[in-house]
Amino acid sequence: MNWEMALQQEGARWRAASSAGAQDVERLLRGTMARLGGSGLRAEEALALLGHLLEPLCGSSGAASAMATAARQCGGVSRRTWPRFVTSLSELIGSFCGLAAGQLVGQAGHSLEVA
Image 1 (cartoon, rainbow, N blue to C red):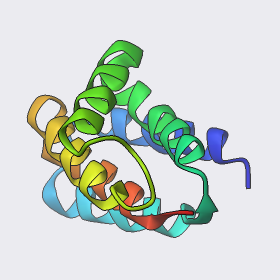
Image 2: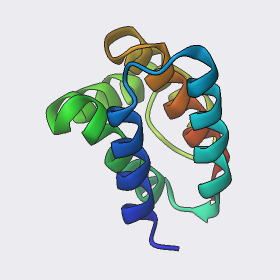
Image 3: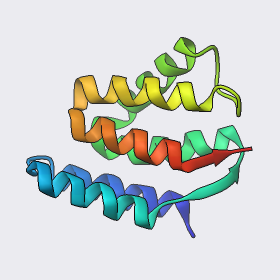
Image 4: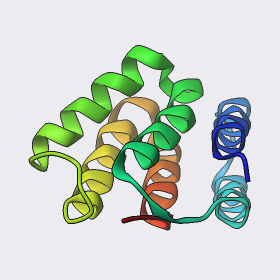
């Protein structure tokens, strides 16, 4: 699977559906999770994938800033800190891009297994 392209496509789907209702958001989340999934990624690879997902939602500067802030909040990004990083990132994205975007980031991030 080409992760970069897959995450860019998912981000674009979410951006296009920014005014979706609750049922549509849930459907989008289920579809996204069915199309995504990954294991054994290095932290750098997982960060790059999340960055590609975030860019269509909040722009490249917003994505980089949110990821840097979340990394600081959890003491860096590693296999051990990945779950806390994703939770922090999800909350940050949810606060300025909306709850659905935050849920997408959380679901996608927690589905990635960092080695």
